[in-house]
Image 1 (cartoon, rainbow over the protein chains, first blue to last red):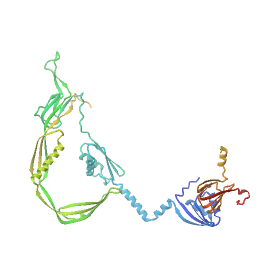
Image 2: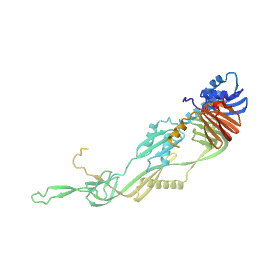
Image 3: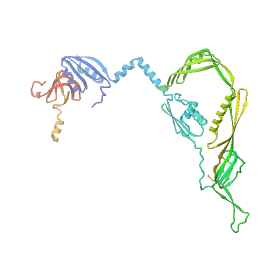
Image 4: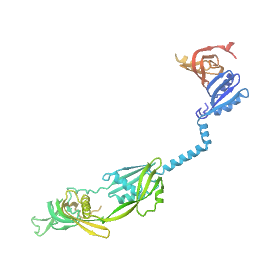
Length: 401
Length: 89
């Protein structure tokens, strides 16, 4: 059987006028011409559908005994031909293809995986600063993005960025900072993990190495795991002292000083609006950016306001906003001392939250203000009582690996 | 129907074979179209003729000696006009 396509490809509906239509149909059957929807209107007229490649053969069979009129053509081939005959269709298709291509050059979705200690908002914020956000171009330098993340976020062990179409997948592996405790079977010292004055030492195992009042630095031994042993065995000289290695245990409390410097504005600035105002439109389509108001205004001091009218990420990143720029007169006024003190106390609270370890006791707190030309330096001094000390394995001999 | 009868039925390529279901009729072994109007269709199956009578008859398809007819079917007739009957051409 010949495979000549289907009626869906290209078919022709024709009207046949003439006598003895049965003979014509019979000849068509004999020659294997497929026909559809044969409608006998009268003895001399009928209409039927046949495939385009059979039409020539059909006309040859009909000769000049029948009048054949094409009523219509159907199928996807003539539909495509018809569509491509119109210039507007071609332009539309080209535009569609261009939009498709253009929108494929932007990141439309950002997914972050693997974060534990950081929040997604923190990582997104950092990525935005690095230039990777929903709506940004895919041609950004990913090496720079990674470098920025490593610098901006602490304790990032690895970061990977992968594009899947318009989706950017960011995978993060956070490093582990919790030191592994030394195995109970291995000898170890207790060493200081921060500097401070030793206040109290409770040694359960090992020898106290740092007496109260001693100033220790990170890494200094607080409780030693090397215990001197005087041998009493027969035949051993009394002066010979050997050593025994133990797994030290205990708590060491120390007074830890903190010194932090912050700066505050000496003056507060008051913005008094004048009557001058400029309006404009900000439009961003992909990398194309225009702000009509910014091109017009010429104020020395101004306040920029924007009302978002449209924001799209798909199919292409687009932003439309109504902009108003108000001219302002800026005057300055010295800040009230009580206001400065309140601000400084807020800084102290934040410093304690950020720097001081949990379960620490705050012994002393002092604030010192130093006035500059237009800034005020705030030195915060804190003294806390903290538990310092971490286990450090004693390595005997020279380890090979 | 035993195997012999089935084989004979399958290889009867010059005999009328019709399948009627509701408003559709499938005629196999169509060798020649003898008469075609909106109320009657007569075809030659080789050794015999088949006639379908009805209203608004329409040939939906003719392909590979098979004809599909739709419409309101009233009756089906068979003629053995090959040996001198009035249907013989």
